[in-house]
Length: 133
Image 1 (cartoon, rainbow, N blue to C red):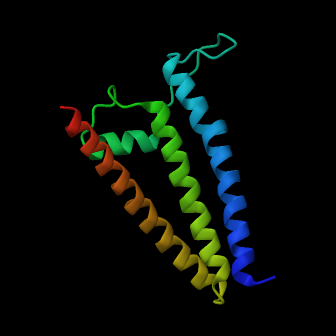
Image 2: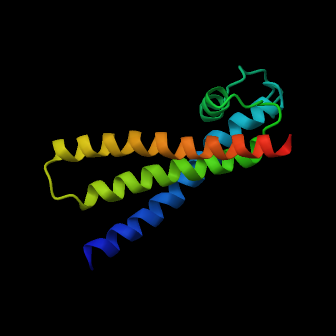
């Protein structure tokens, strides 16, 4: 099997796995706690957790977090996170360098993609908010 085809298959499988785990097991639970004001399904009181990506975007771009559609945002955030993790792992697997160089490239690529994709998404939300006014 071609090396690039194997990497593309791993990218797709990893993307789906990371999206499902991030959306259903992490962000969806946090969003339900936020909406229910810290009360779980078993009527236990828990500390309300915030979704750090939404906090970052709303603070950096001065967005009103009450006007944001949290359900759509966590889907997009989970897609962004899955894309970042999948791209970084696929690119690093294709590199024929020593593990030290792979780690250096992975961290540089990771931070670059996080900054770039969240910047684009934040500007998109800011533009949408200004359009509504």
